[in-house]
Length: 277
Image (cartoon, rainbow, N blue to C red):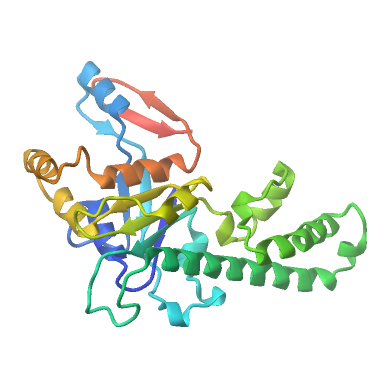
């Protein structure tokens, strides 16, 4: 399971990746264990020497694109190849950032959503152009004919602002779409990178959650600092902030749950392990 972090420059993607990895120096791809209290309890019950959680890969391979230079065709290959996307939007204040001096997470979220829809519409139109030249696409019942009918139906929906993941499509049509790298078909999460202490939700976040998209508010700098602390320091710091648990863990868990997988456990004194199924 690979999740691509995507956001505009200075949105905090790199800091977030450091928080997820628990390290200041990280590569562009890190594997993070999914927090699971059931695994911890099971491991303690059997006295396991090793505890192995489910792993999720987070990548920050995407080159930065400013809002002004953003076009559907500029979406990086790393995002296209990912199994899911976590959009990182800036809500923290920083006068050093040269564009959009005043942060507006809702604006950036909507702009990136539009970016993904434009990318998908371009992909649909290119595929339809190829199908128009294929004789088989004019023969009822052929895979090419059915694909042409499906893609034609997607044009109005996607151009009208509907992401593919939200469309009510039968399983056979969704299977066809899996062969293409549609961004709006991928599971999506939103990370609102805010100032320390600004934990209150904004109205637009409820609109996004109503679509089944998890939204996690966090301060990436705080989360990175927490991840670098030992457990005693971490609990003391969380208590001082008035927070029960790290938003990092909530984000990892929310991302894993987007895949709609179940977790199978194996337990023994040598190793207790969680497996995604």
